[in-house]
Amino acid sequence: MTPTAEGEQAPDDVLAALADPIRREVLAVLAREGGATSTSLAASLPITRQAVAKHLAVLDRAGLVRAHRAGREVRYEADLEPLRRTTRWMDTLATQWEHRLNAIKDLAEGATGP
Image: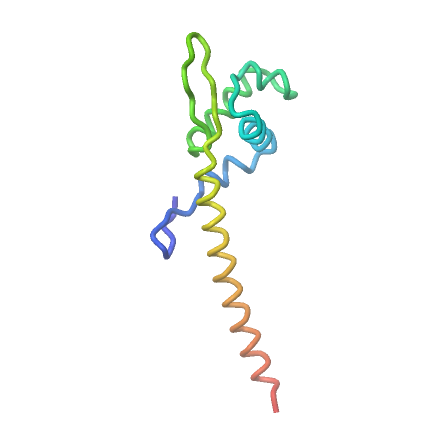
């Protein structure tokens, strides 16, 4: 992750994890249902359980899911805090660009003024 001006980390892992539509769907299902196993996720997706497990590993590395062992099963739950941090980071980035674009606009309008 890359440090930002505010000292937070740029959410490279989160953005990379969310770049894949299947991973976004997996995260959405976990957030909506409160948790699931890789087997139950595979039943609702057009991919195998092994593929779901690989997607879950990427989401786990990004901090977007947590695994809990329940007997022989491993249940996954969504952790949306990294997504919230990503949203804050993106909002900050958008504000910075808005300020830059306004400064360019002001310069351009000043150059063509009376």
